[in-house]
Image 1: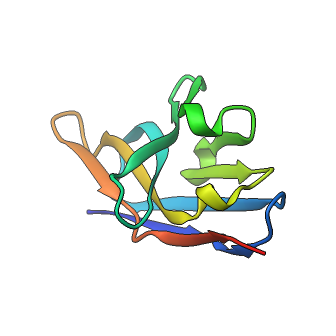
Image 2: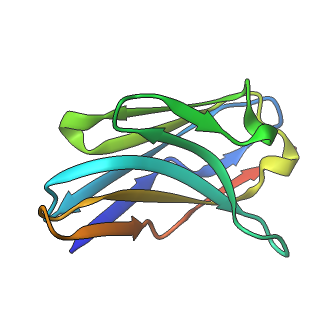
Length: 120
């Protein structure tokens, strides 16, 4: 099985910054894409950012220009640098990693979620 461990969430003032980390471990042959999603109370889970194996990234419209996703393939880790945070960024942030256990079996794993609260 593949397990994800997240860190970096917390309380920050509007305009501040946070950096989230997510590390995958377990039986992994390769990782194809890694991403971050978030869910606020009463709302559906939405895409924040995704980065594919080739290094290209895509962002949700609400975070473009403020958030940056990156990955360290040697460490099986994905990061989310969040700048210029707004109260509406408050949500539980979830890491998602997709890849292959072997040449015949793929996987999709989710982290447990980390709370990000933006408030004065």
